[in-house]
Image (cartoon, rainbow, N blue to C red; front, side):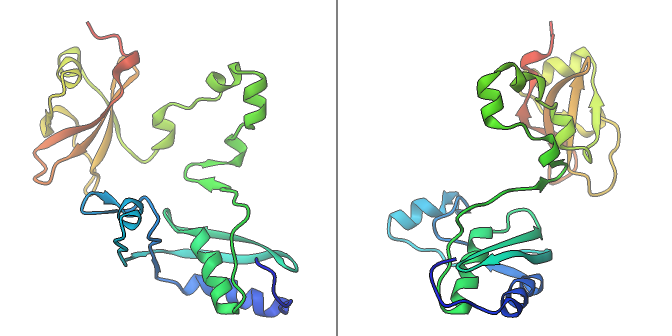
Length: 211
């Protein structure tokens, strides 16, 4: 927080916990969010400021430490919540201004800090990078993963969409899946609006041995 008169801990606890009542948050004009295909930061630099909000869900927020003028807090929130904006809005409400000086992401489903490797350790021993890489299927444990035949694998590699019958039926509401070939991650596919085709949204076949 910026330099200002000390605040009672009770006031800070109340303000921080109040974030749990938030249902939406202003989108910063200098952000990567897009408007009609254009990043907001590009529009802002061109002189066009877009005002919009986004839905957020904060399930927990608490003060960890306060030593004037620095406040340390933790937040358990939905993906895409602007933490820097939370700090800014806190300073506005307190009437002193505030800026975020440090940010640690402790958890991003399904990974936590226990899965992280210090950058300095990797720089000292580059082999640690490959040793600690996770397959994509670990990052999307809720997605179905299907193995396909060599015929379908070749079509996917050529960029062709798959009829919905090419993969087993997925649960209602499931729109994305991971396609494998001989245990290699081949592609990420998304069900189209009509539910008739799987569209290839990301090819992953560099390591797949497809003749």
